[in-house]
Image (cartoon, rainbow, N blue to C red; front, side, top):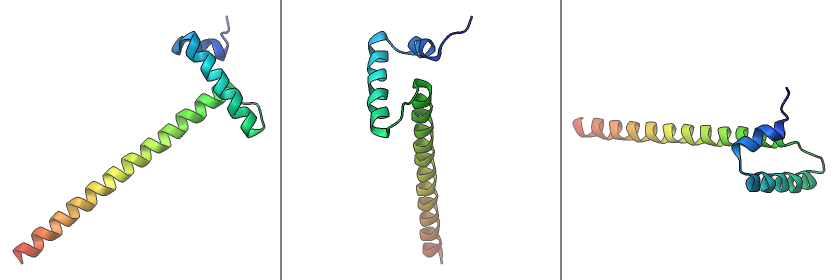
Length: 80
């Protein structure tokens, strides 16, 4: 028995939320000038979230490393 992708997404969302999602996707499709499936839209949302999250992680690591280097450099100036 094959279950459609729309039926699968309904397991995750209430009926009301699923209806809102379908309207959002329809509006997005009209803006893009091409029809987008629910699964394609959800996939794009997830990938966008992953890229944003990875960016946040990278910037957090970069800021932490910069702070540690600055503290190290400051300690070296004091001991010299």
